[in-house]
Length: 424
Length: 167
Ligand SMILES: Cc1cc2nc3c(=O)[nH]c(=O)nc-3n(C[C@H](O)[C@H](O)[C@H](O)COP(=O)(O)O)c2cc1C
Ligand code: SF4
Ligand code: FES
Image: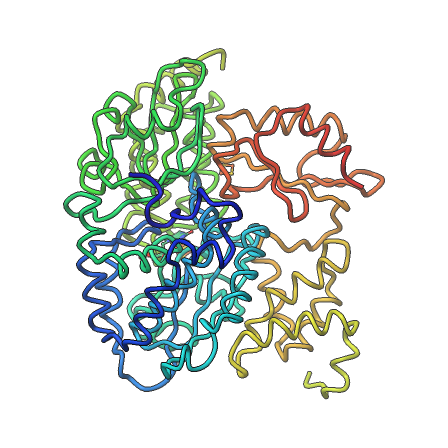
């Protein structure tokens, strides 16, 4: 079973149009919820049953997150969608925005109904101009059809939804930095607690979910939480969008059941390019520790299987590398990224990411010293768990993963002042 | 700092004012500041792709913000340019998926063809180059963005054709 949830309209022509979405039953469940005045607690219960875990990377159970909001507390509440999609390797939310924006809109309205929020924002990264225009066009259609605005379908429930465009900062994918950004500030993460459920956008109770999480909601409510849970495996309900890229023949986005063997996903993606040998896989976005290719071939694409191999499913971004790749160079590029994108607020992250980059860079360019490997371990250790947000960990984890599995390659660089792979 | 409403409409052309007002309308009335990112982008596009201090000051006046708060935003986010850029700003992704699909060849090709490197503008002002992080299109690696458009699955030949097609 492929493309049954978030990409269910993908086979249609111009699938982003309202009429196409409705031809697949789109907005039916919203109509039903509104006209039958389905109990919000009921909706949250169904989402809990579905086993849906946050698709933005952290994998937090969505239903549980929603239940943290005191629905009857007075005043404004917000639903915020995270379409910042910046974790290197991830390109799935772009496809939801481009090809099935209405399902995200429907999901956000339903989320608003469930937690008692009457306003929502979708934070789309600033570079995503085409997806932004698609989403705006869909908002327009939804407004005209009476799915947005006041007193939706005579239910007494109001919901207004707008887009906020980012400005090119990976850190704004972190949920509290994202809120700061909507408030017109630099995107610097906030201390937690308080969590957004209590003190979120404009200081009001807020839920933030990833695009894919929210776009899954209409199908969960239409077919039931159990239906969704059963698509996947234990602890990993549903299907999931995997963005697979790297040295493969047919990179792209594949919506497949959680628990699908990696080998099957690789086959769907056309297998290795030029018949080369698989060397390594970064299974969940660039912050997920690397897994050697032969080990990866025995794993399944679900939270527990990947965690069991010492990595994480993250955003479902799978980067496949063949045996021409130098792991030192790969890590150098990743460390550069985290250093560039650190917001600079906490010392261990600001200084530590700089150290990591400089040391890996020095090893890569043949200037490495023997003590550098321990130094890398040490710096990564000093960042982990000691920062305001998880970017610090995201920078440390790939270093730890690379040294765990490819220490010999780093050692070779230090000993021979050159690369053991290819001509480098 | 507080300017009267009449003054505000003189800060920008009526069309720019209308566009910024559309952003302001998305947020709660007391949170005009939320429109700063949208406003900066509009003003930047209108000014050939970069922001001057004077333009940022005008945005500050328009949104009742202290100028420093606007500068902070403009310097924090990488899509705002504080120096002139080319008419066509070529942003090349060099992150891992693009790197392993030979983004370096694309960069080299552009450098040779245009005679500039990252951070530079061609003498005629037509092109500038910028290195960017993953743009969320790794399935089409190597890729680049020019203006609002993504270009994927690049080869040097495809790059040539794309540049030729630009005004
Ligand atoms: C540095 C950093 C970057 C992040 N980038 C994203 C992102 O681009 N998209 C996203 O959905 N979540 C991102 N997250 C996770 C969010 O903070 C948050 O957990 C998520 O949006 C919650 O939604 P979910 O529970 O539906 O996954 C990022 C987290 C960190 C620490
Ligand atoms: S961990 Fe890094 S990115 Fe996160 S708040 Fe601290 S300095 Fe900023
Ligand atoms: S790595 Fe280049 S678009 Fe993602």
